[in-house]
Length: 148
Image (cartoon, rainbow, N blue to C red; front, top):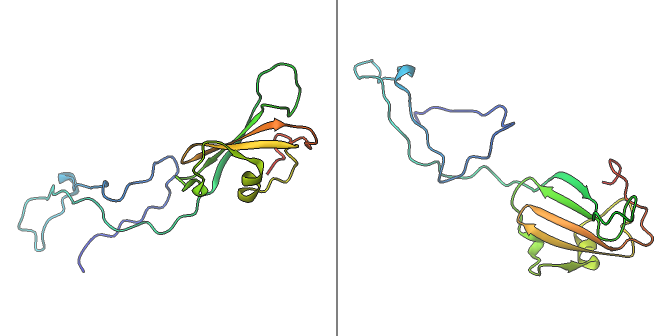
């Protein structure tokens, strides 16, 4: 096989290139020619990349606490929400309802601090899950920078 191998060393700050969308084109300034060099420098483009990047597993990018803003509480209380953002699209754990009870949340996630007597989950999109307190009675309460 004759070709060029490109190894990506750091993807920080870049989006994921999409299979079927990513293309490349040689620059004339790169002076890539046939061997022995009889042609002009190529500026040929490629077809879209095919294949796969391997199997990836979603990981949590952020866990964000947001107060209900009712102004009558300090700390974790009814209506407060925890937003979980994943590294990539998920299958939403095959949950098809718009809002689901604590019993379903508890089958999906383990929290190392008690979220209270009742809470519910909701997928906002394929990457974002929200957990909202319905009844914070008995919560630890979850502490910023300590809940995992």
